Length: 295
Image 1 (cartoon, rainbow, N blue to C red):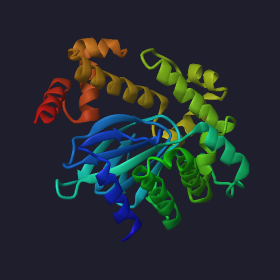
Image 2 (image 1 turned 135 degrees about the vertical axis):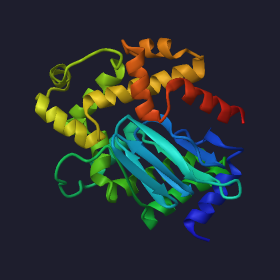
Image 3 (image 1 turned 60 degrees about the vertical axis):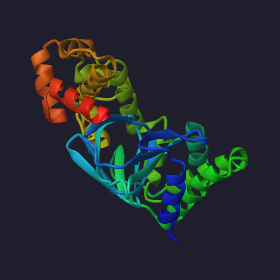
Image 4 (image 1 turned 180 degrees about the vertical axis):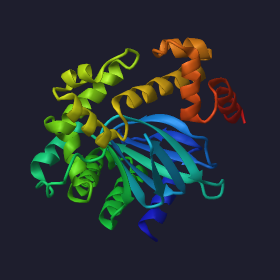
């Protein structure tokens, strides 16, 4: 039995149905989908995502990251993106797992693991790549503990540490080190992203944002695009649109109210940008989403 096959068996035992499911392992989330899905916005936290079965696409800025069984992605900052399951059936449902990164563990390993060779330019905030056998085996040992609840408190932290260690010592090493670093240009980009996240409803200039990050406007613009695949204003727009979509879906707000709530002055501009992002006007998109939920 391969690592992926065994992992799929374990996940199936602990997934009662479609959707996102928390686990007794604090930072581990399991996901199942028995059908392909509509594009859905999400803000991806710093985490590991490993697809165990099926396929999905994640669109970030103008880039599409394609996941398949045995491929994983690493996210270094909170990034707004669109995700869509592209291969799944009731007989062979899409399965994946997310492991959120523990900042304390990241900081500890950054001090103990020798740094990788210097990489040119800032690491991208998200990548997808084939998973090494060593990392697959480490993740398998982690999920196996779901079948041993008595062992979880003792072995869970050790298994989680091994997974993160494999990321530090593999091709994602430079990226992992950037997550734990509080210095350098990527860390300053992270501060700029956090500032936008708190103030996404408000207008700002690149000069104002650069001052918040302690960088020159040109340097911030260049490195922001390298990390997020978006300009700062595109990043803000994605956050606004995702929040508006959540408000309309969860609270039943109408289009105009949601647009004003997230900082748009013109509902018509909001509708145009929403359609470019989500593929349909807001009202039609809400009707489609509610129909898929009720169905």
